[in-house]
Amino acid sequence: MAAVLDEADGVPQHMRVVEATGRSIRLNVWRGDAAGGSMVGYDVPVQEGMVVLDAVLWVQQHLSGDLAVRWNCKAAKCGSCSAEVDGFPRLMCKSRLDEYGSEVSVRPMQTFPVVRDLVTDVSWNYEINRQIPPFTPTQADLEDPEPWRMQQQDVDRMIEFRKCIECFLCQDVCHVLRNHGRQDAYYGPRFMIRMATLEMHPKDSLDRRPMLKGSAGVGMCNITKCCQDVCPEHIHITDNAIIPLKERMADEYFDPVRALARKAGLSTGRKRRKVTSIKDV
Ligand code: SF4
Ligand code: SF4
Ligand code: FES
Image 1 (spheres, rainbow, N blue to C red):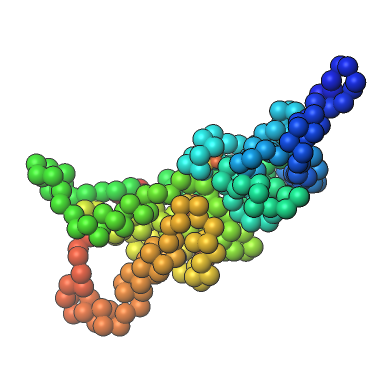
Image 2: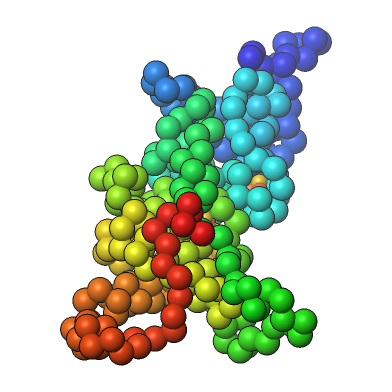
């Protein structure tokens, strides 16, 4: 879409704003679709407190109405506006323009197929989510008339994991998915968070360790912590979720003492129902 011109003198209206504030930024946005695309530069007037999403929406409103961008809350809570800002996975609504110089680039997340411009197809994540058996308490717990009691440390752990806003920035940065394309072998850090939430819940009765070792592929993670570094909710993805899950998986499958105990018919911990897919629940 062409710039809107003032009828009197033919000057683009957005340049009037630049004149008013005295500052502008060069916003380079990737434009294209699955067939290909390129960076397109726009001069955007800057006002105090603007974030990258403001600049993108300003371009959409004033210069290019067909610029595709996904967003919703503009409060860093819906997880919709994920993109790569100057090469770093970020929420556009949480990236202040004054963190950058006179030029900033915005690209769509690279791990997911592009739909158009800054919008990617993240539906694979929802397919993975559906494969994870949900929270399943025992029948006795379900029928217990008393409120469930839990240790405060268990509650705190849940609260940290439940802060996830499903922005998928961690999935975007994880090299197993991004560089090696092993979506067939690893669910990714977001879903290690979900599995940790369930596995560490004291009232959950299922055993997802076979799934962790199998289709979820926790062994593919080599604890680089890149996912943790980009999480806008500051969830300790590797420290508090992935490493404990790896330990549980190793305990079950690679601990020789436990293997001997199992052979001797001795208990090796809490009895839980094993599941390898959601159909087993
Ligand atoms: S720590 Fe594991 S899950 Fe996180 S980015 Fe690295 S390989 Fe991926
Ligand atoms: S764990 Fe963090 S980075 Fe990953 S989807 Fe959730 S909020 Fe986003
Ligand atoms: S618009 Fe909701 S997280 Fe950015």
